Length: 128
Image 1 (spheres, rainbow, N blue to C red):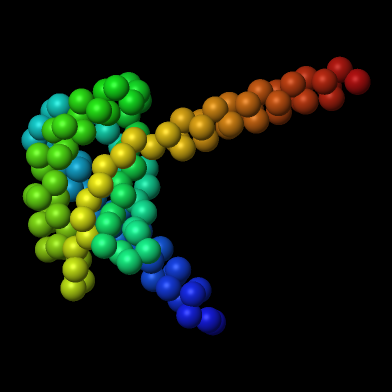
Image 2 (image 1 turned 30 degrees about the vertical axis):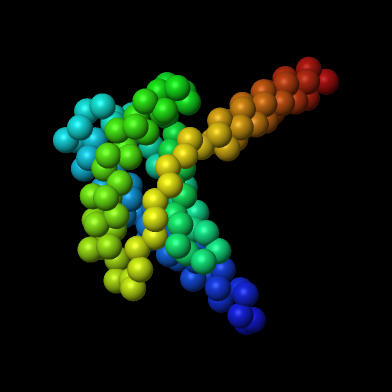
């Protein structure tokens, strides 16, 4: 296995670990601060140098609701970093950057279209 594949595997493992830990911490925060309720962590991406962690959230109420909750999340950023640092056995804890996950909305629309095509196909095949 070449070096780039090993690097990708290690990055994916660390992203998975970060996703699990951030989700746990956010759940605890949402129990204490009801204004953060309804936020879901969809995915986590690390920068190439692993110094920045992009956390993508989904809010069923939309991007405007996320922007309001993001102001609140920023206040908890130091606590989240400290929680991540204590949970992970790593030399460095990456900086956190919060973003709305527009990819999730696109994925939902594509899945809806695929389901509609399946229904239309099944309906047409039974008519023949």
